Image (tube, rainbow, N blue to C red; front, side):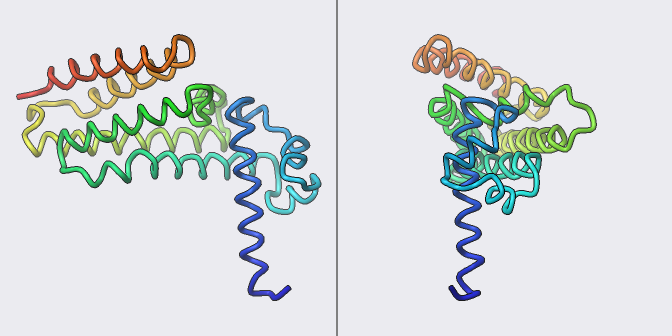
Length: 201
């Protein structure tokens, strides 16, 4: 094997491990990740997994980073094709709801927020807080553009509206798992329509 192909093979193996970790974490949570089960799932030894991730925590941090990138690519990137303002914000929300439909039985990011919210001075908690803060800022940016476009009142509190949108999406995830996505999405869309209408000029 040439040295030119070695980094590519290593990167592919790393992605394979992360994908398997993602599937396990969707059902068992970040703290439920077992190196033994992960190694078995990808057909490697435990030492082989550790060769790519120096520790279980390193693996968990890399997984959070990978899922965050997947989340943004799924929700935000397609929405950026829409005109600035309410159309873009609605596209973000619609894509977010579709993410909720796909992940109704387990979202790694929401699960991590629950698992690590009370762990002070934890690198995992810091990564979760950064991911959640970055996403909240993306929503606030989309709201600010809607204000600039005249879709929302000039006195719109972007921080408050972002919190309200986020709260409704948490409700969607919660109800989708318990009562089914269709019912949850109908209620969420109706609530979002009322919420956006309350901020219109």
